[in-house]
Every structure is written in C-alpha cells, then in structure tokens.
Image (cartoon, rainbow, N blue to C red; front, side, top):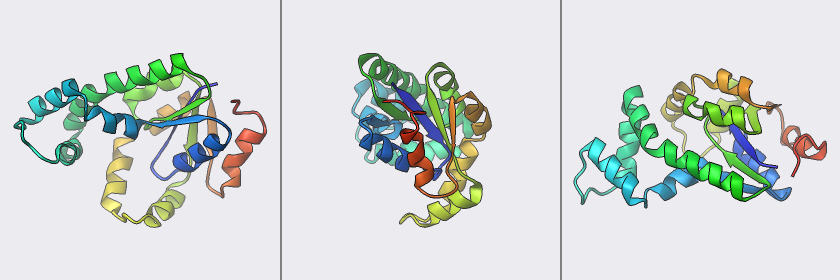
Length: 185
C-alpha cells in the first residue's frame, strides 16, 4: 500500500518515515524531488525567466528560497513551476510500485492528492514542535514561523487525511501504527 505523509514542521514526519522504512516502505521526500528538479532544464528556464536571472547566476536555490519567502504571490509562482512536475513524479511512483510513503507539505496545492490517496497526517502541538525545532542545529525561529505561516490551511489538509496520528509524546506513539496493521505494507 502507498501513503502520502504530511504534517507541520517538526511534527515527526521524518521519524515516522524512518520507522516506515524499517517496515519495508520505500521513502520519498518531496524536498528531495524538488532538489532533483534543479537539474531539469525546463524548470531552470522557468525559474530564471520569472526571477530575471542571467544564465551565469550562482546559488540559484538560495535565490529561489529568498524569492519564495518574500510574499504569497512569489510562493504561488514557485509552486506553479515545481508542483505540476512534483505531482506527476508522485503519481508515476504510485503507479509503478507499492509500499511507498511520500512526504508532502500540508499546503493547499497538495489538497487533492491527500483526498485521492491514502494519507497520514502527523500532528503535534505547537509547544512540542517548537521544542523539537529548538533542538535542531539550525535554530532560526524566524524560519519556523515562516513555514508555519505558509501552512495556514493545515486543518483542511488534516481533515482530508485517512489517518491522523497524535505525536505529542514519544516514538512509541508512531511505532504502534505499524504493529496494529492500521498502516499496511
């Protein structure tokens, strides 16, 4: 069985995916898909066109990230460039294999995918997520707040998911979903 996995920043998605991998699931992260798309000439052309970047511009990812966080309109532009291809890759993966978990952010452009496919929402309270974030080596609270603000429709996404996992406690709260056949490989 294939699943989409989502949740807010520091909710426990990565830990959940590590557990899934131990249960023979293939793991794919949307961030990795996007990172690979920086090698796609069509995507690069569109990015450079919208951002008015010359061919020899270094640090394209950094420039896109800055642009992305500047405004909601800029996020929509970047999402319009990347998301059709990301969604196509995900659909092709689901058609070609089984026992996959693909992580996607809880944003409205992914809503139809969460409704259509088996999906898991990992939930953790704001305080738990902030504590987890502060344990990371990159302790940029501004980044945490920006990501949270972008995912302001997460409740709508949460309601569309088949399985909602409360991850406010310890790793056992994630493990139990695999032992009870709620999540089938």
